[in-house]
Length: 124
Image (cartoon, rainbow, N blue to C red):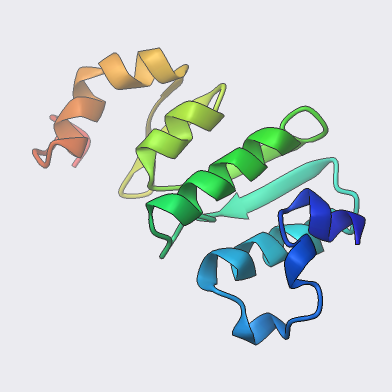
């Protein structure tokens, strides 16, 4: 019950997991991971397939967990990443392009080139 409350599913406790909307199913995934009381929570694209409202709820949930555990987040939603991450590592074709703070990543010319659709020189 406490985990359902923590991830915003208190009203859904009596539903079959497969009948939950996609965003609620992803919140349930987080609740199941939290049940193990991890020191490090690994999240692989938790916002994948979500609409803006569901994504916003997941970002709020992840943000609420940051004080109690370390989180390794793999995500393509850059707005969410910039809001959540204290340190970012940008990969391009499996290679590290750069690591830094959100401001450092945003301002890096190679990151801008890659995410604007042009190839970064020397990193293709």
